Length: 348
Image (tube, rainbow, N blue to C red; front, side, top):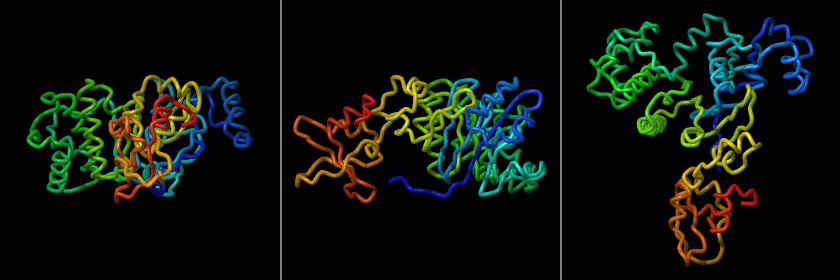
């Protein structure tokens, strides 16, 4: 069973409405309306819903991926959480503090000290070299020059750019530039890390390498992350939990396995498409109870991808035991159940 961690970020009933007077629409009996009633109320009054009634929690140290097509509201939600865009109404709590009630001055301080942000356009300053770019946000914290450079160097080493400290952005590849952006966002030692389509401008091979690098960094740093993407395969690879959005509304929230095995509707099902589930699902996602047949079976780690376990089956194998980190058997994989899981069979 997945470890339950404290909630770091909680978003409740978040709305972002565009139009002539959105604040007027959310007063009075708005909160007592049904969800569909709220949407009709807003749209019937000629306003546009960029984010409608969005609610979710992000646990400490988890990667929460918000995904959807262009115009789905995913980036709007991320910007509303950080208040780079002002929400129309709702609640955004970071460690229990409602950010929507924080003053502008408090929000500046929170962004400087508690939030890190990485965007699709790397946003590097062309007249600064790598170490100066990484150290730049630390100036706003009034950190001494020596400490700024020391921390910047640590981040440069962390993202694998040692030796590039004196290079300028135009001298770097796209992947290297993105690493500088990641190092810069980490230099402030954020408690909450926002990444908005950070790898989408990169070539496919570099993008895959950056995803692997990102997971390596997360294993070391254990940050609480909100990651925005339109790529379902990227979401499956990176996420602890995925939130799929369409037209400003949440369609489904769940683990990669929950969404891959049990899509909530046709829209989510279309996202899954031809996803190679054997490379997405883990052994623990489809295991049944341990077999009590007195026989020895091949063993696979609970967090191994299903493809690894499938290769252990031959004509004589009736089951593969699934073991936890301590080597204890916690379940079993059986051929029929595995086959059903790969074909989205609800009876799996």
